[in-house]
Length: 246
Image (cartoon, rainbow, N blue to C red):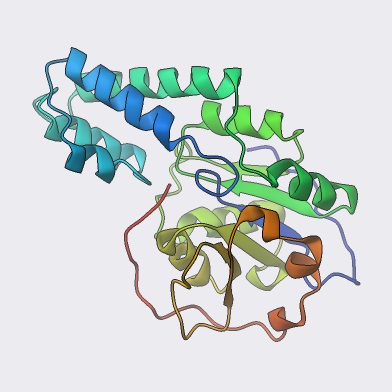
């Protein structure tokens, strides 16, 4: 994980923005679904709609379990499952590298934050080569990337975001997370990190440390860095650990 010294800006409430990737900065889920269906069918599996739907937001381990659920391999722990997942990830990585499916507003907001000297990180369960393709597409403005290859667990586990905060040399109160899923929000809030959630409904309605915006284009530097609602810091969410996104 590449690390640079985060900025010291006393005029900012927040010193670092931690980004979820899939569903927040880009939408690569169609790539995953298509590669999963093609590869598991070729290996003799039956990727039902229910199994394919469960792939959304899956960690690497869960994806291997889903490969086994299709019947393409006998057990998710065997080398064949790892090889099949690697082939699927290679297909996705090639498509992302060729044409990253960035969501509207991704380049604008990450560039704006970089220009004012705010540290940024990507925290994702996707393989590192995919995360790095997206980071390059966005101008390599990220001080830290925490990926599914780093052994930091999968959301809603608190460890992915805790790892990013530690690598930045900051505390939870110095950071804000941008997420699109309840699972990712739970991971961040369990660390006491404030969350801007993209979507139609607030994951934890009673949590004052989480605010909702309709889409990424609605996320502004003012909302992330100076918004008075981020003071004082609130504690971790007690809403539990729902299932969800990568």
